[in-house]
Amino acid sequence: MPGIDLNYFIRQANKLTEKIEQRKQELANETVEATSGEGRVTVVANGIQEIRSIKIDKSAIDPNDTSMLEDLITAAVNTALASSRQHMQKELAKISGGIKIPGIT
Image (cartoon, rainbow, N blue to C red):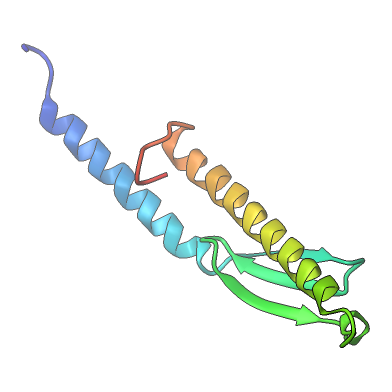
């Protein structure tokens, strides 16, 4: 097609991919925090959905009710991962202009 420079579009796509990958590396150092059980379980995740730490208050530990602690941990982890995912999507949308690119954003 006359007037269309495919190389230009390829270069632009490559630049966008580089910016997104760089931002993903930065997101690995950013964290979000979630709690459950009125703060008895705290989970910290980074911006690329990796759990960094889990803190459990002693008041949440009852040897006779381990299922409650398991539920608190599960709830806090799921909340932290959801927050991390939302944060990453918001940050990558800033770069891609809101366009979802499969496998990249």
